[in-house]
Image 1 (cartoon, rainbow, N blue to C red):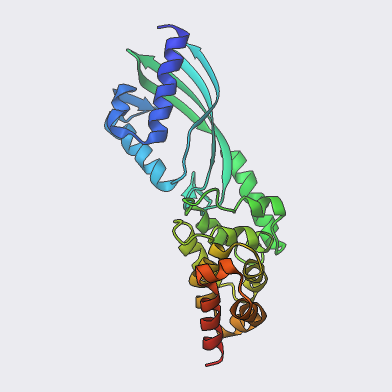
Image 2: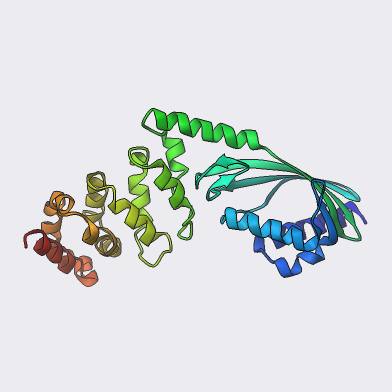
Length: 271
């Protein structure tokens, strides 16, 4: 088998992992596959990967470097993900970490028969250590805080890290977090909104900026997911914005029913 052919097979294997296409993994992994000295077989190999994806919902294998010398492949894989709880014995708890894995594979008959793998655990420890020192100081740097912001509307796994960091660590990214509640149909929006409501007064300014903005659909969901769940003390701090929306709504606000929601909020406040 040529280097090019083996590299093509390997990239097919990585694509299979990222699709979580376990029924077809047997096209790439042998029935008696060994991983770091343990004979897992195909079924054990699948179980190992299923466990990995369960513990790291946003797991994605990215090939950073690939060297072929048939029947061997050496690869450096890169990861940027949020393990839900413990990972390699470390309390990651949903925080975003980036690390690499150096792997050597032996192929036979076009399938993986043995794997030797080493993960850069020190890189993860360094990131968690920096996080801990920042929390002890009562603040997380802007770079670290921004690593908590969900990457897309499906990134529910990000919530664990956000809750773990808590306030005031997430103060620099409150506007960014609120932006991910702009559509109540997004998977991340309802659970993130529930957490933001628990912050109380610190959420007033970010919510006020939304209510004063031009995005009427976002205002609608801000009422539905957040304003309606806030304590009366917090709603009172928003009274000026609520009155303006109730008395001087834009045409777009009226179309979305934002003015009516504002009047309902004021009625609850003064009932």
